[in-house]
Structures are given as structure tokens and as C-alpha cells.
Image 1 (cartoon, rainbow over the protein chains, first blue to last red):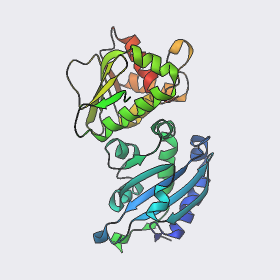
Image 2: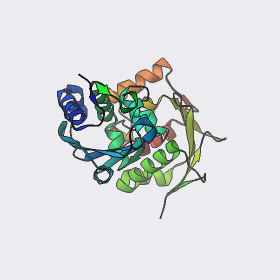
Image 3: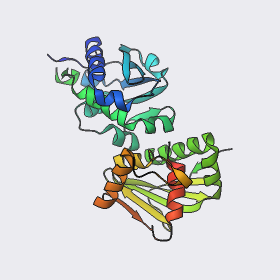
Image 4: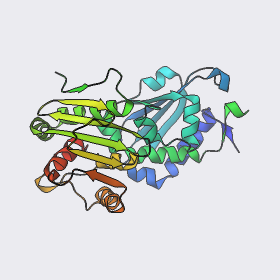
Length: 140
Length: 139
């Protein structure tokens, strides 16, 4: 059953999908930093406030993924920021995250060599997102 | 002192990303700093699936990053985004040579054979390409 995008239930299912992925486990071996996703508000798309997703990822495992404030997400070691509709494009495979970062459509903050070293892991995270059935706020 | 500067008032995302990546690599690893200090070359990178690119103008110890492809390049690399990122993930082996026999290296070599990674100006610039690869690589 579809869950509301970027809700607590979505975060729980996303974490489960990440932890089910052997590809992610292999690609993220050695990763030990937190990642924050900032989903910028788009009131006309039924997203009235900016949302933060905080991911505690460690050595191929998602220890915790939860919804928080934008400030919570921005305090993570790595922060990726984009408007809601762009995140929707990523989660529905209309936008490749790597291309999005190279084009500046997803804004990245954090140590670049580290994120480049774990490109494959970030792709697997995106894959895990696409496996969570989602009800999008602009389609409600 | 900033060893990397942008030629454009508004650097593109890809120019900022590669400039930042090289700066971080050079500042964190003495062997990359040595390569950087000795390299004089103009290297273009064109990412074919986003139709964007940049030119890296290495001047022995400093780098100017330009948006887009600029003239008088010694080497131009044309590949899809994934392949460009793989180039940054090549391991460096014996004698400072990029490793092409592990998973990432085989993937890059296959793209080269398939024509999905094109390197213009390779003839006569192989040593330059290896040096650039070492500076690029996060490994």
C-alpha cells in the first residue's frame, strides 16, 4: 500500500528497503557519515513547508532514517538539497541523481572526494527509494 | 591560498564540482600535489548525457576551471556522467598507473572499447592523461 511521501511511514519503509539491498551493503562498506536530504517546500504542489530527512548510514547499514526539520538535515555530514518536485523526479527515475548533481539540479554539500568514492552507494540508495510505493502530495 | 579558481563569474555546477574535487584531492594527498605542481595542460571534459562540460587549465601549481569546452585543449574526454564518475574512482597502482583490471577499471576500459568513452588528443599525451587521472582519482 502506498505511503505518503516523506512521512514517518515512508522513512521506515525506505530504511527497510536500504537494509534489504545487498548491492547497497557492498557499495557502502566503510561509509560512516550522516546524510541529510532537504526537500524544499513547494506550496503549489501541496508541500507547504521544507522537510528534512536524516539518514544515519554506517558501513552498509541504515541505522536510522527519520523525518525531521530542514535544520536537522542541514546539520548532517552530507546534505543534498532540492525542491520537492526534483526529489520526485529522482524517486520516479526521471532524473538520475549523479546527473542531477553534475547539473546542479541537486545541490550537494560535503566532502566531494568521499561522495565521489561512494557514487555506487548513492545510486543504490536511489534505487531503494524507488521501491517504496508512494502517494505524492501533488497527486492527492 | 586557493589553488583552484573559476574563470567564469557564475561557474556551472559541473565546473564547481570538478574544481572542488581536484582542490580537495590535491590538498589532502602529497603525491597528488606533486603531480598537480608539475602539470601544464588544458583538459576538456564533456558529459555527453547532460550536454555540459568544462575545461581544466592546469598551470603547474594552479588550476583555472572554465565553463564549457575552451579552445587549445591538449586532451578532451567525452563520456556519460557515470563513466566520468568512474574515472574519478580508478585506483592508482604501480608506477602511478591507473588500474584497469579491477571492477571499476574494467568498466572504464569496456566503455573505451565500446566508444562510449572517447579521449581526443591521446596520441603524444598518454603521460598527461595518466597524471590527470591520478589528480582526479579519489582513490
